[in-house]
Image 1 (spheres, rainbow, N blue to C red):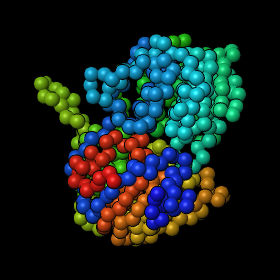
Image 2: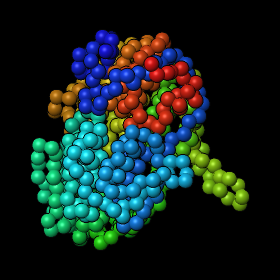
Image 3: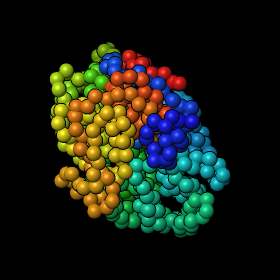
Amino acid sequence: MLPRAAIGGSAPRDKPSGGGCALTVNDVLTVHGGTPLHGRIRVRGAKNLVSKAMVAALLGDAPSRLYDVPRIRDVEVVRGLLELHGVRVTDGTEDGELVFDPANVESATTDEINVHAGSSRIPILLCGPLLHRLGHAFIPDLGGCHIGPRPIDFHIQALRQFGAVVDKGPDGMHLTAPTGLHGTKLELPYPSVGATEQVLLTAVMAEGVTELRNAAVEPEIIDLICVLQKMGAIIKVHTDRVIEIQGVPRLGGYTHRPIPDRIEAASWAAAALATGGDIEVLGAEQVDMMTFLNVFRSVGGAYEVTDMRPPRNGSPGQEGKIRFWHPGDELKAVALETDVHPGFMTDWQQPLVVALTQARGLSIVHETVYEQRLGYTQALNSMGATIQVYRDCLGGTPCRFGRRDFKHSAVIAGPSKLHAADLVIPDLRAGFSHLIAALAAEGTSRVYGVDLIDRGYEDFEAKLAALGAHAERA
């Protein structure tokens, strides 16, 4: 049973609560804070691309090969779903290499799929590929972290426009395509990453041309387009968030090395800043982190970029990296707003806010992507931070939540001296933020539900040890 001092969920404090992300109470990390993090770690392929590239392998009639795959929970879930549907998934010869053979794609039973219900939101992205390969698909109740409703309405509406028939049942949604899937014109009410992925994975083999307006254009989306293009897809990315897909009758396999995980890289950067440390992140690339790097420097953080150098004339080459450190001067308050790419990524917000608690003045954060993403600040306040959340839009970026009852803006007053506390992790990114706060605080904290961090951060405990952190499982 958790101590009554535990913070994080909305349930009574003597019970764990992740608001929808399953917590394992025995997964407790004891963190002895107050030590700056110093050292070197490496990030692999982006979590938000790797899982979608794995799904794309379903569309091919030949094996696919994916490199630099992180060992995280989400990858395990998608691998299990693919294997349920007859895809043979094997480890390659290189560390982090997976090979997918879709030669024997088959139906999975509702009960088998439901084993994964609640553990991931990936199943809905299998619909288009399965409709193409089998003529039918099933969506169980979807899980994922509760940082806002993230409704699947966009997905279902898009699939129906392609010609899918959706029947809702007590166990989930059953989809069929009696006349096949056909190209269509769609415009998203919001540039949803998930809905854009759905359209891409469905349109590439739909008969005719699909035009998607107001599409998401995040780097992971562009990388997914690269994967599909390698398979034989014809996809044009126009200006003003318009993507045109010409359906093809067949797709082959792919060989792909994904872009590095810019979310994990930024999370370690925020940890360096919050703890007064110095962390070198191997694999991190500047191009997809430019917006973050601007804010990081504005706060007072320092960084140094080393570009990747390919092997040449017998030289071994060099992996790209970014070194992040706290230069020792006082951190400065900033105002920032999250937004779709190329804006400041919502997943960067939570880790950076911990560092902003150490900045002098009033920092303002306006969250415009997920309406319930500021709940984690309650735990930071319990540790000595001064953060006030508001329903008002404290910024100029157009926002869907301004006239609704969501506390989606925050004012952080600093610097604040953080002290240890017992914390319950509510979701993946908030969990890493709580971990950073525990590392920056004086004293010993207990962080409950750290298995959630495994969903998106590979070997994070080993990386903490490499950086000199004092933390161990209870």
